[in-house]
Image (cartoon, rainbow, N blue to C red; front, side):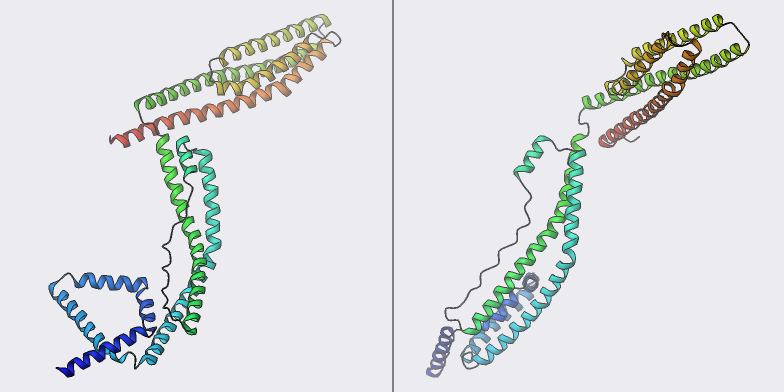
Length: 397
């Protein structure tokens, strides 16, 4: 009994002596267990071990055995202190080598992906500007975005390293090396923030576009009715423009044909030795008829243009201004007294065929293209709204 007490006292004294002497024995194991993969593996093992009674019993026995082995080995810790420190240093160096390999791989990946991430961020900025231009956010959403700017992902802070009160030179060098590694990882973490920022920017853009499109869709019966009324007005406008274009086309063809016939008739009359008085009267009658037709066409266009929407009137006003200006020139040519009738008729025909008719033809072609576009747009928008409503309500066509 006394022998056992003496052995227990000696082991307790040895344990106290080992606790008083600073040791780096826990350096390797603390670093090893701080690796996330090791922590996750140990957690999984402990979780699965606690699921059955037999595994829990085995885990308890293993803990008991480990405790007894620690108690038995504690008297020898001070005796083999140097060997344990060498083994711990070798283990730490092996972990340092692994960290160096990982850092080189991370730096290589960062070097390769950094330019790509910058290009991705630049592309995200361009796409965001286009989205803001064509799909502007509501006022409240924009204010909320200004109040909550984008913030990069936060990483958990690096746990502080606990140092013993008495540190030797080797421990100081080790701490300096760990500090350099920590600063290097912080720099690499900034590069990782750029990559994560690029991916989050695209996710944020996708969410913004979907939300803005959802806000722009009609959400009530009044919106749907208003959209249907707009489609009907567009179709009626297209019909009115088609009628005006048909009338203008007929007038241009008739005027061109009439001008050609009149020129040929005048030429034949002059060649047939008609009198000067008859020729002048004929030219005067033709000039008066041409001016009358031009006035009638101008009044018809002005009357029909009032029924058109504002955006179509804005496109028709320059054409009316040009026609009014050219008609004034034609009238001025018709009433000139310093030119012979044949010269006035020639000038009027040349002015009409060279300037007025080509511009009118081009304008009519442009109006026909716009009518065709608005007709297709009205039909497409109406069908799209009906299909979207059916899809939203769940009606099968």
